[in-house]
Image (tube, rainbow, N blue to C red; front, side, top):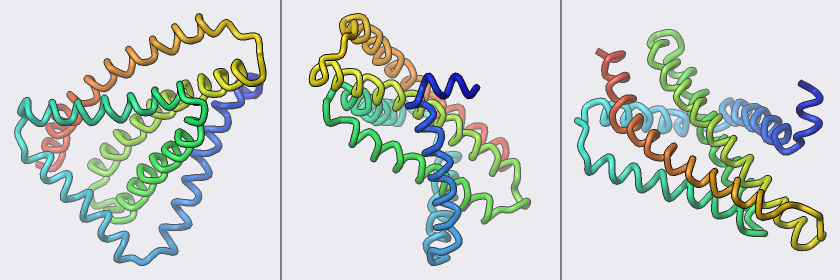
Length: 196
């Protein structure tokens, strides 16, 4: 495992970043105004209620699919940009913080009163966070390779690497569709089942 991390410093950096963001989220949770925590919990609860009560429809699916494709494409496109790595890191930290802070707030609010719902919602966020981390990993890696190839004249087989990165875009399109189906249909039904 240590050898794997040594060979892949970017992945190691992202994992350490998630741990640090989690620690920061915990510290902020115990230091920020409780009204702010309550607002977050109310927003999550409101989202869950609205999601579980709304029936599946194509309009919601298209809207969610458009948002997912747009977000994932932006991440992918930033990987092609030379200066994109700075925006990628910012978005990565922001995404991690929002997801982890929501999980911490939800566990604190419900405690053991609705543990099944809390675990389900948290696991869903964690799975999304893992997949997003992988996407960011490839985008940041390609951005660094492109920078070294153009400015440091490193000897990379850039055409082969670019073709592989284009395959990531295809994966993102497929993932966006699957994610939209889960967001609009599967997850709401699961929550509805748990709540009722």
